[in-house]
Image (cartoon, rainbow, N blue to C red; front, side, top):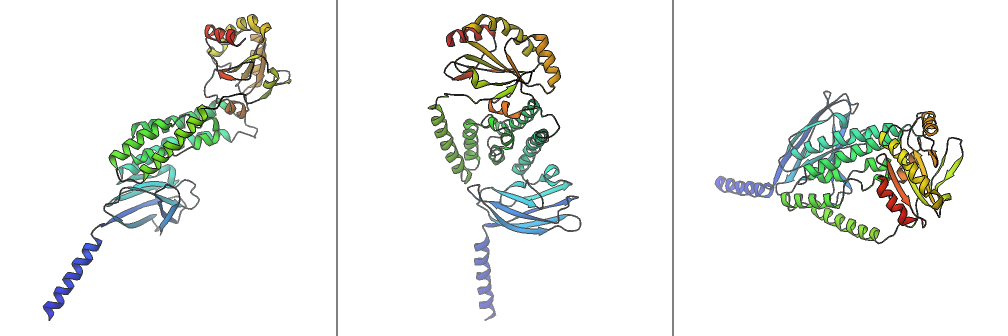
Length: 378
């Protein structure tokens, strides 16, 4: 009888082991010190990368330690998880795979200072966060000058935004076969400050490259379908945009040195060079000198220049206009972010040529090439 009972127990134990054999123990642990946080909660990001699901909550011990234990099917492909905490606008994103033992350490601000071990993908995300969000934070600091006594410098804002986007593009290009690149592509913090930079960095080409990389490395990943759908949507949008002709331009109104306002639209019917410049650039100043000859030659035929300064010091700008004796409409754009965002000015000098019909195109700043375009437009 005892042997029979023992045999039954053995069979039950074997069935139980077989039932749970596909589950693996995965841990996420660490220590957050000096953050003012007393608890953290773990979320699993849904397979459509949309709605997160809260998995567990952990109270931090006196030394800041915490621990999560997860049972993940051994055949499951890596998924995104997030660690959230009080007053944390930016969660710590992790890529978690079966049997991972991930550890995190942070002193002070969790997001800015965390270090992660035990997951190469999660470590890559941490590296991306550090470079991308450092630039975004500088951009946010510059933007704080808007509406205050602090003079807003659009060139510095664009420089910070470009740095953020370039770090994003560089990261994705360096790690195309990783889920970390999939995560990196989805950030648009810089574009939120300067909307005209939307699409300036990450493109459909990056999406296709990452799709190929993830499909090769994680052929069963649910994120493949997301990339395929988003690529199809982007290609459709590109096709639609390609069929739309730019028939007008954003209007702007700025003041000259005498505080007289000049609307760009008041020049309708003429061929207008919309020129963004700064006196701090030797190239800009050289172009100003060369442009005078072209202006004198074609002004009576309907050519006008709307000359927008990006300088922050209005007094210095006025003195430069006087010394250079600008014969055209010279206005001050320093301190106004909208003017530069409207025209996607990411570097100086930048110029556009607006024809008599209001159609606009990027203008060459080589005087020979510009003269050829003027002759066609006039």
